[in-house]
View 1: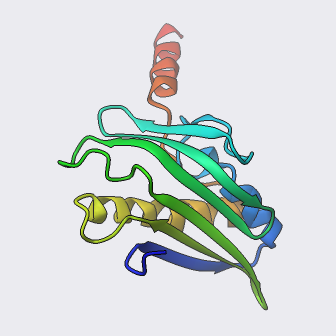
View 2: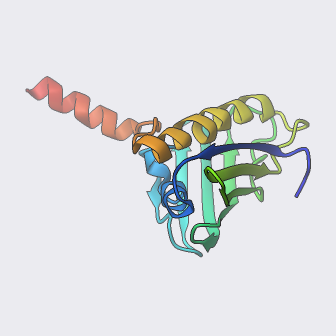
Length: 161
C-alpha cells in the first residue's frame, strides 16, 4: 500500500455485515448505471460517465464483514493528460468492528497527489465513499449518480404522458 494514496474512514453503528452488504452494492451509493456483477469475487463491473470517466473493475477479494477489494483493470479518464491513471490501481474497503459499531476504511491505492486527477477524484471519493456510502449504510438511501440512459428514458416517458 502506498501511504500517500487517498484514504478516508468513518464509524457507523451498523454491524460489519451490514457495512459489507452496502459496500458490495455500489449502485446504491456510487452509480445506478453500474453494469455487471459487484458482489462475487472474480466478476467484473463497469462504471461510466460517458465522455468523462470509464472504469472496468474486477472484484478480487470478498471477505464478508471484513474486506472488499476491487482492481481497476481498465480505465479512461477523459479530463487528464494520462487517461489511464486509474488502470491497475486498487480500491479497498476494510471493515472493522469497534465498541460503538463498525469502522470502514476506504483506500484507493494508486490515487496519489502526484497524479493529475488526484484533486477531482479524491473529492469525488469523499462524496461517494465518505458521504453517499455512509448514508446508504446508516439510512438505506445513498446519493448515487443516475444512469444517463435511464434519465433519458424517464424524461421521454414523462413527455409521452
